[in-house]
Length: 115
Image (cartoon, rainbow, N blue to C red):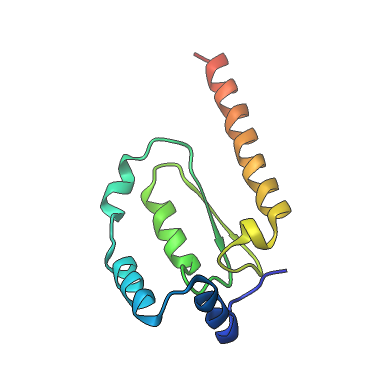
């Protein structure tokens, strides 16, 4: 199922992209300093937040915080998955996203019938 990036995998990623540790440090610091949780309440679109259970870059607790800040958002953790379930298990990811939108369409249709 899921895959985590080990040290060898991280080094390979860096080598393939030609970036050095300094670039990763700057990106990491920018990522760590970015906080817009206070703006999430303004999102009005249906929202599904999926998190990989084994994601080391953005742990599920961060996904939960995002979902908690968006009115009506749905949070789900994908067991055994890491940072990129859309690539690691695309069939699982796509099935869940598709089901979310079908549920939203059904709910919207029911709401329209009751107006």
